[in-house]
Length: 245
Ligand code: SAM
Image 1: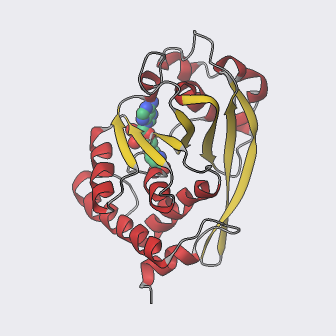
Image 2: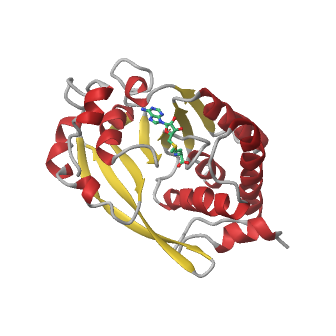
């Protein structure tokens, strides 16, 4: 029988979730939560202190992408922080390869340690800024089938700093809240210079006990190489976003 935390993770899975969470995976995800909270006391990796909150807000929410990512895909998780959604994705989808990247070394070091603890061979990390690592000439340029990002920056900023990671035909999956429309205002026309097309928004619902929470994934498709003027300098990317309100 599962103990409380893994059972909570299984029962809090979002509605209509198709990827199987076996008892073993639920145990591993619970171990990840415990490891995160114990390391957090030393390194301040997350503001969340409670086990169930960390399981729900980090692990369960991250699993939303497990149903969307295609088989055997390569994934760049931009601004992975303490490994979300990268670590839960690598755990539940052994067929995919995930590169978790973040500009903060203590966070990529934590992801490395967690990957070793979980005996994951399908996750690696890269410490650096996305807009530099994705630039033409970098070995990460055009190398990935998917870009994922959660709680990192606006959709406009993420599209500009991350489009370089994608192969043509690849997808960018941006995890957002229920009110994603404002962020996407004008995106249809404005993402074209980045070689992207807005493919749509997928809504999903996660459950914590009897409470339901609506979330969204904005999906962009790489249709061609970006114009050479992109990405611009980071100060411009932030101060003059291409789209959104
Ligand atoms: N994705 C994680 C999550 O959902 O828990 C972490 C979110 S945390 C609020 C945002 C992270 O993005 C931080 O760890 C920060 O260092 C990283 N970050 C922000 N801008 C970045 C950039 N341009 N390149 C790489 N990492 C970046």
